[in-house]
Length: 310
Ligand code: NAD
Ligand code: UDP
Image 1 (cartoon, rainbow, N blue to C red):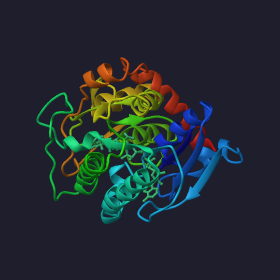
Image 2 (image 1 turned 180 degrees about the horizontal axis):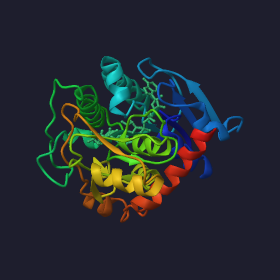
Image 3 (image 1 turned 135 degrees about the horizontal axis):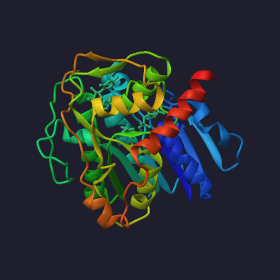
Image 4 (image 1 turned 180 degrees about the vertical axis):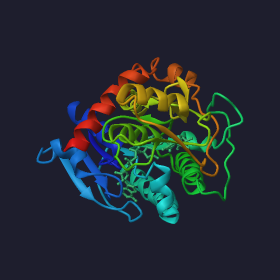
């Protein structure tokens, strides 16, 4: 198949491309390199089945493809808040453009949505039937509401125009190729510990997250895209940790001498987050994560160690 991956030079997109290329597909990677890097897909450049296009999805584009994985959007709060209006445009206009493309060429389109659609959740763990608790005017809303609108558009194109869609809600995912300055918690703590700096815990560290290793996520993507269930479906690792527990784990694994400092909790930071993955198990051939936190952290730490040395 000829497959378009928007945001393909980013963290998750580049791991997805590795799988698609290895499986023998023809891949078009479309990215504006805001948080993505050519280095993430370097090994495919020059391969006749791989094509890289520098393009911003807020502008229309004409391509002929069979499937679209639509991932383009900055994912770290630091990056999506840097230009909040651009984040809304990417989620709304960008998703409209990709849905229009899917409609024109009759491609199946997969939307990378997020656990952020649940906001600061009052239901725990979060099931797909929960409608969420999102502040519509806060500093996270460009992303949260942007993704909610992207989901709305996707389901309306499905209902009104018969577009073949798949929607995944991704929970916190980590692994090699995150940016050292990404700003998300796993990369921050690892880079800080490697550099002998203090690990910056926001708030008292009692807020929770559930961390999924990127290869588990990509496996779930392929099952959803190539199955019959349209979603939305949660993909994430249900093992839940407080942020302080994560800091202590990384401290122990990288640098027991690294200190922990406490900084103010950002506005609207969700207190807890854990996916209910019953739907994924039921519809995605018993999908569940296989990589435990420490095993995934080992690989991620090794990546950052190499990258910082380079
Ligand atoms: P990332 O920032 O590494 O990747 C995003 C990619 O999109 C980058 O390569 C960036 O350059 C590109 N991009 C951004 N705006 C663009 C635009 N207007 N036009 C073209 N390209 C653009 O982030 P990631 O962690 O790989 O996230 C990928 C997707 O998964 C995003 O849609 C994100 O919202 C979603 N997601 C990720 C997580 C996670 O924990 N990593 C959680 C929930 C959802
Ligand atoms: N966090 C932290 N220190 C950091 C970066 C993040 O304590 O250096 C916290 C953040 O406040 C949040 C959690 O870690 O409670 C996860 O943050 P991240 O930005 O990785 O993802 P999100 O909040 O979008 O789930």
